[in-house]
Length: 112
Image (tube, rainbow, N blue to C red):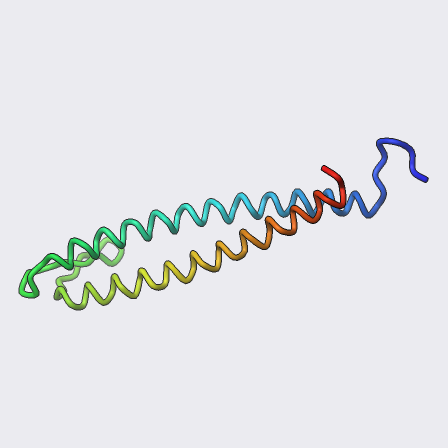
């Protein structure tokens, strides 16, 4: 039997894995926040574009360059972007949930 306060190799591995998962969780949560902001910004932009008349001159930025475009093209682009963001957000949220479950399992094994 091990002495009090000393961890078994399995417990040490669990502790290491716990800290790795915590770091991953922090990173995923930051990514989720970033994607939530992107979703909010894209949703707001789409609301503004939806209110425009189709004959309105509109510009879309690509990096530091602005391109003239039509309202329908920008609407489609923003809608596609929102879908992509939502898919990525969903994936990140699933990963967050899986990590939280793994952390809970480790906590139960270590009785934290």
